[in-house]
Amino acid sequence: MTLAIDVSGLDKSFGDKHVVKDVAIQVEQGHICGFLGPNGSGKTTTLRMLCGLLTPDSGSGEVLGLDFPSRAEEIKRRTGYMTQRFSLYEDLTIEENLTFVARVYSLDRARDRVDESLEKLGLQHRRRQLAGQLSGGWKQRLALAASILHEPRLLLLDEPTAGVDPQARRDFWHEIHGLADAGMTVLVSTHYMDEAERCHEIAYIFNGELIARGTAEEVIAESGLVTYEAVGPRADRLASELAGARGVAMVAPFGQALHVSGTDRKALESAIAPHRREPYRWAEVPPTLEDVFIRLMGRAQAERTAAA
Image (cartoon, helix red, strand yellow):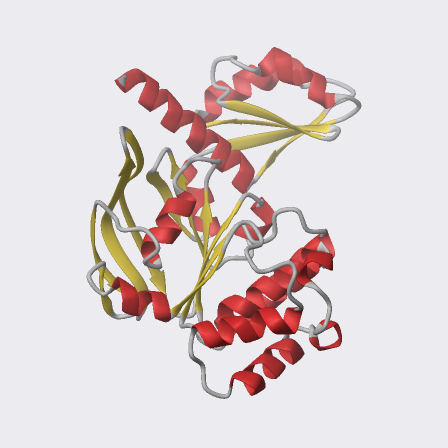
C-alpha cells in the first residue's frame, strides 16, 4: 500500500482558538477519502495545511512522498485545490481563465492542455462564455478543470458540490472517480451523506479532532448502534415521546418513518415496547451514516462538556 498522505500530530490555532488538534490522516494513493464534519470543525484548515497554503503549528509526515511540512512548496505544485467558493475570474471567459491558470504554472503545451481540458469536461462549446454567466454546475466544472490542469497527483476538494443540483453532483462524482481510477488521490470535504458513501473511505472531524475513520461499513459497524425504524402515519410524532427515554441515544424522523437508536439493545427495546402498536410497523434496520455521525457528534459534545 502506497500512501499519498501520511501525516500525524497536525495542529493549528488562530489566537486562542484551537482549530485542529493532533490530527493524523492517511490516504492511500488512488483512493477517494471523504472528509466530514460540521461547519467550523477544522476541515478547511486541514486541507489548506496539507496543500501548503497554511503553515501548521506542528505536525510531521509525508505528502506525495515529500517531507511535510518542510517541502510545502513542492507539495503545493503537485496538488490541485478546489476552494469552497468559486474563485476564478468571473469577467474572463472559460478559455481565458484556464489559459491564465496554465501561465501561472508555466505549463508547456498550454494551448493544447486548455483544449484537452475543455474537451474532457464538456466545456468546449462554452469556451467563450464569461465565467460569471455560468450556472453553479458549470462553474463547478470550470473550477475542477482549473484545479487539475497542471496534472496534480493529489486533489483537495472543499465542499465542491454545495449549492448544485443533483444531476450536476452525480456528473461531478463520475469525473472524480475517473480521476481516481487514473491514479489521482482525492480528499474531499462534504456535508452530504450520500456523497460520503461514494468514497473509498471516510474521516470524521469534530471540534478539530478526528473521531472516526475507515470505510463507511467499518464506521457503521464500530459505532455499536442498534437502530429500529417505525413506519406509519405520522410516526414522527413518536419522537417527542421517545427522546430522552432510557436506552434511546437518538431519534430521527425520515418522512413518515422514525429511526430510534441506542447502544444498549435491551434498554432500547424496552423503550419502544409501549409503542409497538397499530398503526406503526417496527423493524430493526441497519443504522445509516447519518445516524452514526449524529451519535458521534452528540457523544463528543457530551465528553467535551463533562471535561470543561
